[in-house]
Length: 317
Image (cartoon, rainbow, N blue to C red; front, side):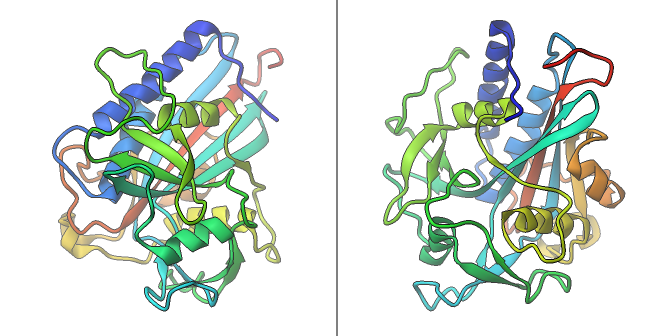
């Protein structure tokens, strides 16, 4: 496992950055899930990129916004409707490099949900089933390259890569032990495992994101994939490629000309990052202002990649 071992001061800086990004995300105006996720992507990237690690380590993050979300259907869905569901709202990627060489890649795919009570029960049983049971599914309304392709995200109860991102609408008792180091900041984003019939294993969003950045959380994936692969590696690759070959237009979202686009929201993709390799040519330079808009009727997902490790002229981890 390729981990980052921060000093005490670096640990506090990382924790504070992630904590602050959540507080900024939940500022006014109120917004729907995709817009809140896009805000989180912007603020998380901005906050992480001001941190300078010692001992020759690199920490660089970038956030990408993609119009549209791949839809999937499964013959084993527990309910006849909806016939298809969105695969997710946020894809976190972590690339670890050692002296300029990629040694590990990790990912978490989140389904975001605004909640007003704990414990939370997802309101879409078919989407919940997709995460809880990891069935075989087929892409639909996902562009010509993905439509009809069969995949399987994970086996049942394999939740390292599949989680719910819970955004609290109002003041709620904390469902997890959450410590804060930023004055005035209260935990308002949590993660949970997609167990049935209700979500479980609630955890502070700050702790989960910190563990992801340092290499503890998330599920490993291989890139590039082979044509015969159909599991987790391929699904992560599908979502990144979907961002590069987007095919969904959201004209009513109020973007200039209703343009199809994948926007670079924040940061600069690291040369060793997977987003730099696959998305660099498709990134539009003028993203919508998610921070100050409600994002009505927005259909989209976000990708955040964090690249950590040592530079090519430094000592070992």
